[in-house]
Structure formats: structure tokens, C-alpha cells
Image (cartoon, rainbow, N blue to C red):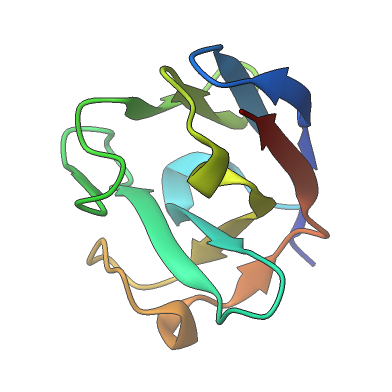
Length: 124
């Protein structure tokens, strides 16, 4: 059974940076395509970033391109989301997700495993 545990969220000011971590257990992340999603209060869950199994392919939501970077550390079996130049509109619960399929996708329904989420709050 795959378990994903996010950490690294918190309260920051606009313009600050945060790095979220997603530690996986039960499977090595080299066998999973990974993604990050977020959900703000009163809004639907939305795609943030995805990274392929090899790490060679990434994709981002337009709203975070140039500010967020997704990466993976195979030794630590962990996926990261580096978030720079944070804005108040980035405030949300951030979820890590993994899928058995090969394609890196922005579709939440395509992911098989989900973490419990970590809160990110950006004050203006």
C-alpha cells in the first residue's frame, strides 16, 4: 500500500518561499508518476505540477510557471515542490499524489494515491 505524507506547509508573507515535501512509503517513487494539487476554501481541487517517473518531464499550471519547481529525490523516496515568490492567491491545502500510469497528467482523477495535505497560507 502506497502512503504519501506531505510536510513543509506554513504561514508566510507574500514574496516568501516554501518547500513542500512528499515522503512516499510502500513503493519507490521511481515506479510512480507524481503530482501536486491544491484546494482553496470554497474552490475545487486544482492541478499545480507533475513530474514523470524519470524526472525528465515536468508540467505546471500557468498560474505557477516560473515560480514553482517540482523535483524528486530517489534516495529519500521524496518529491518536492519548491515555491518561490508566493502570492496570497497561492493559499490552499496542497496535496501530493501518485499514479501508476506512465503519463504525467494534470487530471486529478488519474491519480491513484493521495496524501493528507499540508496547509499553505500566504499573507499580503
